Amino acid sequence: MSVELDAAPRQRGLVLLTKAERLIIDLAPAIDKIPRHQRYRYAARLEGALWHLVDDIIKAAVSGQKSKVYRVDEQIRFIHALLRHGAERKLIGPKRVGEAARQLAEIGAMVGAWRKRFK
Image (cartoon, rainbow, N blue to C red; front, side, top):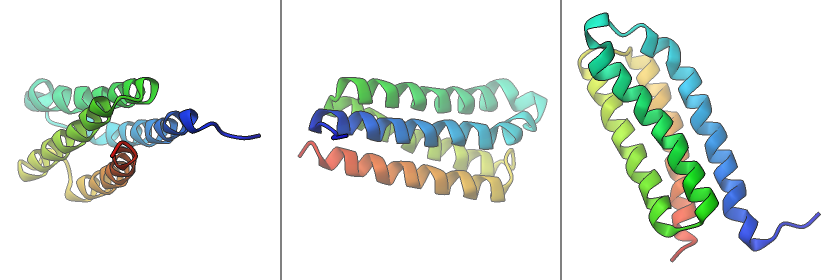
């Protein structure tokens, strides 16, 4: 079975999609433990950003457009910022933030390789 060149970004998108979904699952218990007074302001924003990342990966994989791949990278940076904020305010434990940051870095490296294909 041979893979066409046009299918390669879609396959990369599927791997990224799986990793992004795993990140959501891994962060869910920490998000659920965020204090009630921060659930709407911070927890909803973090969870929404994570699901937006999944949405952006799907759109980039299907369209194959350079701008959509860059949008995925922007979303990863935004999630990093949210995680740093949560760690600084002690809304999420440092161990959990470190693991999430590692997962995001792995996703970011894959997106970086994907971006280089367009140059």
